[in-house]
Length: 284
Image 1 (cartoon, rainbow, N blue to C red):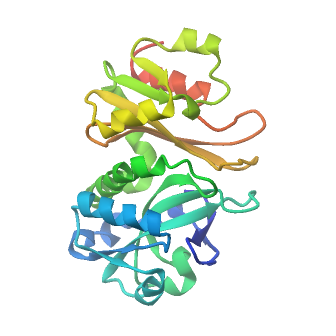
Image 2 (image 1 turned 90 degrees about the vertical axis):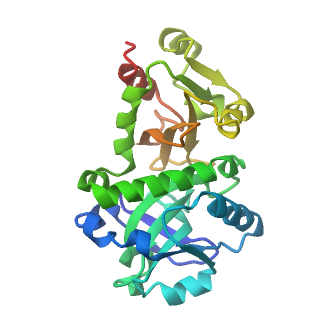
């Protein structure tokens, strides 16, 4: 992750985080992850916290966990006996304010006096826009929890996972041949015109409405990938859009890329994303 300003949800704690500066010895530093308690930090938002409690109880399987408040996190972050799973808001340097919320896993201990910036970041994944989220994040929260756990376990085993981050999962696209790929209409950029669709989409790539797309996630539909994008509700030049394709049966991440939003490139899957996906599927 490039340098972004992180604000703890419900607290005003500006810091700068750089994942790239923290991954050099990640495999060694997080080798105790499964043995330590993961503190799931509640946000103070009753609706979000209710979903977080339920989804963590149903999905978290790789380490012991406990819930704590933001105030408790501030006291406990100095101890390397704990890992912390937090909801944070991210602001890129050209943005006027936080644009997206992320779910981030960090390790407590040395450097905690510097805030989130001082802690070892294991992984962060976007959840939703900071302002006016659609509610789709509640559909994908259990999925994102699975992705975080899978990535962390792989990073404990293989240095390459820690070095390349979530984008390495795009290599899974070679397994997508013959799978159905479902795109929510709202996840496509304005580059995906009717003419472009006719040339680049086929019977295995379906564009549908958001509710129908999310239904594949609820039903754990086999042999299917579903799109999910996260960008600010009101993006500015310099904001970023994150794009994902997720296996609805296994919750594996098959595609993970981001692009900088500009006057030319708006939020959503770009034409180059669709062409790249088709190239992995063996379709020109």
